[in-house]
Length: 103
Image (cartoon, rainbow, N blue to C red; front, top):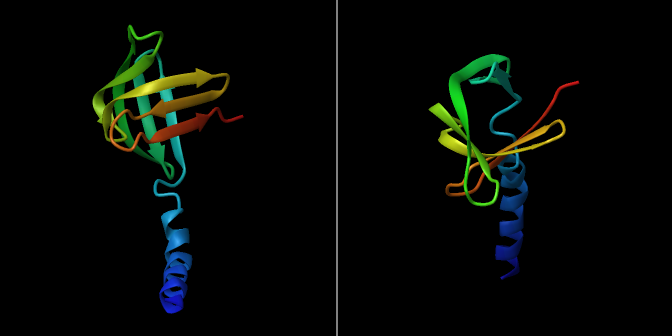
């Protein structure tokens, strides 16, 4: 029994850091004008599209809808506070992207 526990801990010690690594690398999100957005990963533009803000009738929720999907989604929840932008996916795992304004 103790061999199984030590074996499991050894596997977690080896695999754990890989699971916690950043899969996307440095990412930048830039909004141009009133309807254009660009995603840059590692200094290379990986996607551009246009978007529209939609206010829902559920008490003030705002979503951003993309003409072409970005981050794999056609729409995301939108939250803005001071210099922080939060985009949340309402599907599956509920992944959240957090962006801070560069100084």
